[in-house]
Length: 212
Image (cartoon, rainbow, N blue to C red; front, side, top):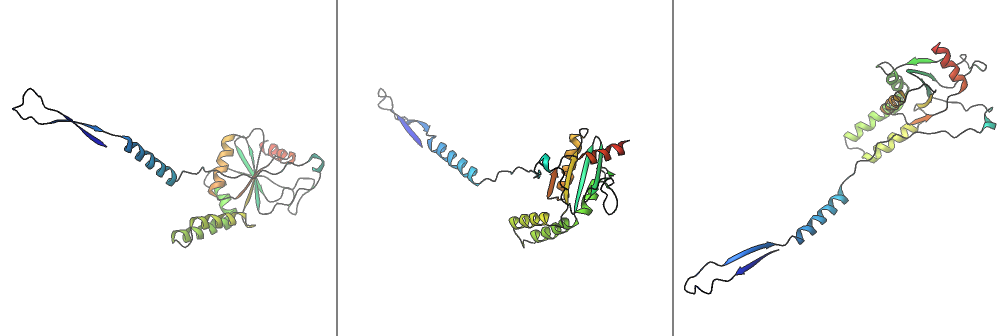
C-alpha cells in the first residue's frame, strides 16, 4: 500500500504559503502474496509433458534344466536378427535343420531400412492394428470418442491375436544404431508386443552361413 508522508513548512516564513512536500512509499508485501498465489495456480493447473516411452516385454529366463523342452509355438510373429549392418528376419516358428517344419527348415531373409524394407514388412504384417487405428482416428476427429477411450481401444487392438508380435535378437556384432532404428520402425507400425530375446545357437549358425 502507498503511504503519503507530509513535510511541514518553514516556520521562519510565516507570511508565505508553500505547497506541502510529500514522499511516496509503496508497500510490496501484497504483491509478493499475489505472486505466490499465481505461481501456485499455474503449478496446479498446468499439464506437464509426459515422457514418451515404449514398453518392451522381456521373457523369463529359462532354467538350464528345461532347455531340452520344446519351445512354445509362435503364431503371427516375426523375428528380426541383427548382425553388424545386416537385418535378417523370418516369420513364424523357427525350425532347425534337424527338426524341419512343414516347409522345411527356417530360411533367413534380408531386409533394410529403406522404403521397401522394414516399414513395408511391418505394415503388411500388422494390417489389423493399423486398420483399427484409422477407424479410431476417424471417431476421435468426429468427437465420437474421448482420448482415453481412443487409447484404450488401440491398446486392446495391439493385444489382439490378429496383431503382429515382434521378437528381436542380436549377435555380438550388432550395432546399437540398428537396434534403435528398428525400435522406431516398430513404434511407427504400432507394434504392441516387442520382446528382446537371446539369440539361439541355430539362428547364429544361419547368420554365419548368410555372411559367408
